[in-house]
Length: 351
Image (cartoon, rainbow, N blue to C red; front, side, top):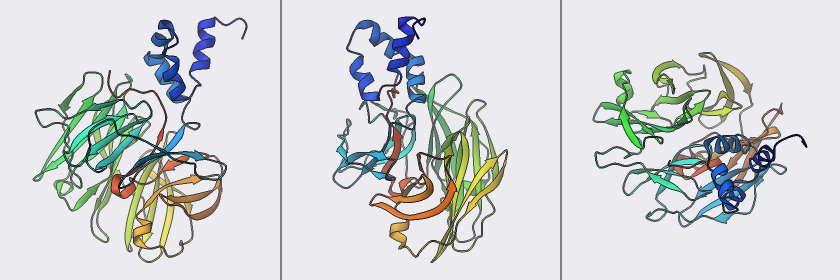
């Protein structure tokens, strides 16, 4: 360490600070401000923040709160109230996608899309006078990703009167552009539900599920660098009762929690290898849970066993022995779009 340049030592120390402390450190001097504002610093700080700075953000009727995650007890810590930095009405903020501390949210009363960092409070409105950046629930889908050039982007899939439009927002150039996407005509129907995009290994993944028992279910993949789409199969799960597949990126591998059943639910954990799904875990049917509570599941956490979490706390435990997943992972889009598991970072929503 004594042989390292002082600049390198300072860089290594500061990239390990919590995001809010980095923000305060910018006021130390001009040199530190310049250092902490570089893309290299932001990228490395973000990569070192994942497991230690996770938070759960929950939006209720009257408040927006952020909870630390206490891994020792597999539960939430005391909350702190967050004030939205943008105008809203009665907390009509829907969280659509999240990546590296940025949240892509929609204001339900205006349909506007916003990129927001709840840690730094910075935000960026994505709506434009030519009707880009407006989101309609149950028709549109959104995915947040970062490409090979470290440019944060938003993929917006719009379904309007049987016509599909796909648009990409670039943080670097602060504008939208249209990209081609030819898919099956039936996927344009409102009878198909598109999930939010899950970013993993240079690809955005969406589940596309027909809203009926035994309906068609597929996964749409978007390569973020070539901007090409392809379609792959859904895991081979029983089509009895309700079927829901929720995607999650775990250590840069795509997993799916597939729940099936009607009065008793079974949960299978699958991992994607190439274009094929491999079952990792199948658990026994879980105890009877009311549909309203089941639909409030927010995420799983593991410390050897898997704990199913809702906004009210722990729902039930799945006993297993898989100890390489040691962080919280979201496995739902929070049904009412009222929450997110995110990492506290200094990533900016604008350049």
